[in-house]
Image 1 (cartoon, rainbow, N blue to C red):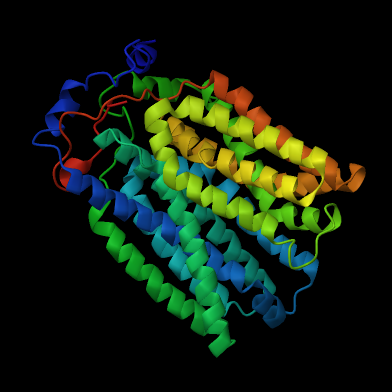
Image 2: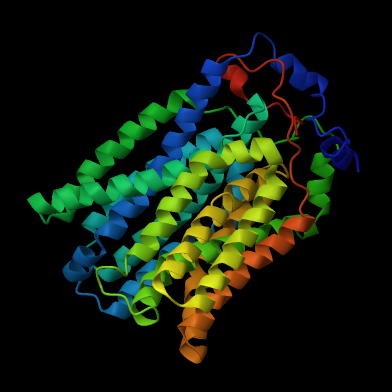
Length: 433
């Protein structure tokens, strides 16, 4: 109850900081420190998008080199997702012991090493092991960098998470362009991954000085927190609601990426040239919306943005499926990109306020949705047709709207009168939530 009163004191403003946190926030406001930390954390998001898209873009070459069948390639992809989903217990422990800053750096270095391992894997079992390890490291970095993003918002009282998520897409795009350019010069996967590794290390070097020395929220400020953590054997209902919102949100994103092109070609009857416009519309609208979503969060709050956005995605896609023509379909896909853009950033922020265990569980449920959602849509489409399968995507977005009603979203208020000065002062103030 004490925590609930702090979040919802009826004023709409962020409550006063505890005494220990207030001592940390001394000195004048430091917008330069906010920008420095924001760009450093953005480099982590860009790093993850770049690393993942780099090896995904060379799947055909890996398939040919290892002489794999389609089923074996599918298992390879499943191994990455399964590794990320199964990393939840490890991530929760490492986040408490190392903090998000050190965990970010360690997991990022592991991802560079695993990229080299995938390039050098001499056979399928070792490649499978390397990809599974990549999934575990992705799970660790995903939680750590989102904890950094939530820490940035708390320490400076400013929204940034949606823009950080936009840089993940930018990293994926940069990796795709690099893959296209390098394959025009050489077919060597090793040479490609070596160049990518150098770029990744440069990104990590740029990120390291500005990362926040983040501790788990409330770890020291709330003396009852350790007792609560040891007493609870299962996640709280609120944490599970956040996990459901994340899972259905990632189902919406992942299914649109996997099935929109096929829907355009088989149901809307477009040409092979026009069919990829479906995923292009979703991706562009999501990127543009994430660049603007932090302003929406400042103006209306996280809860309304998630509820309205997911409703726009679900209703817009449902109307497009009912119409069945090219222009309405593209407009419906645009509604999905626009409405779903802020869901995962806002849920990550809300989960981070409840501690590293909640954040790790919510991230794992999101990975499960991203991994299993498109396969479930395919199973339903095989039974009832692709329009029915895409209808499940619309339903997933509407489920996010329902779950978002019951989630206690962070209060949005004016920025603190002072901001941390310098890297050491950029720690998240314990209990500042």
